[in-house]
Each structure stands twice: as structure tokens, then as C-alpha cells.
Image (cartoon, rainbow, N blue to C red; front, side, top):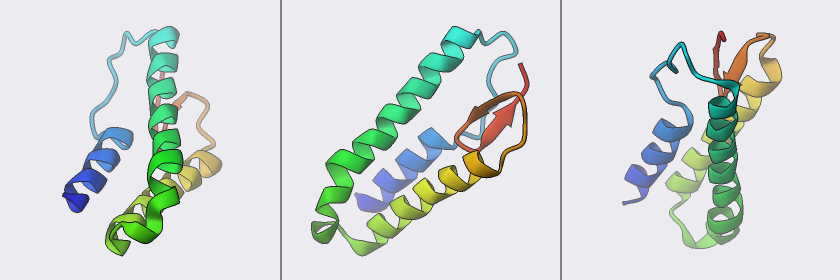
Length: 89
């Protein structure tokens, strides 16, 4: 179960699909808000119990969160940005 859960979080936060060309700023902001809620859920409902969860799962989650952090800090793209995936308006 744990590997599947980690993969689900990663696939959701780092989607490989491109957003539609007609995505409004409001839709983009709603999508971003959901991403933030998922990261907060991981931080508040999963990570506090890291001692009781398989280490491989915790490691994968931490790597995923760091990946998002690195992408958001290093992006110089001026368009929209979704946890490591920049795209134009």
C-alpha cells in the first residue's frame, strides 16, 4: 500500500499532462490551492507519524517534497508554475 500511496501523491503533484490552453487564472489558482492542500495534508497528517510508517515511504515523500521545493526556487520562468511544471498562459 505504501509504495502506491507515494506514487499517487507524486503523480498528482507532478502531473505529466499539460494544462489546457484555455485555462483561466481562476482555474489555475484553484488547482494550485488543491496542490497546497495536499502538501499540507502530507505535512500535518503523515509526517508527524514518520516513526510508525515505513522508512522507504517517508524517504520517497521527503524526496518528492524537496523536488517541488527545488523546482519552485530555481524556476526563472515568468509563466504559470505548478510544482515543477512551468507552462505558458
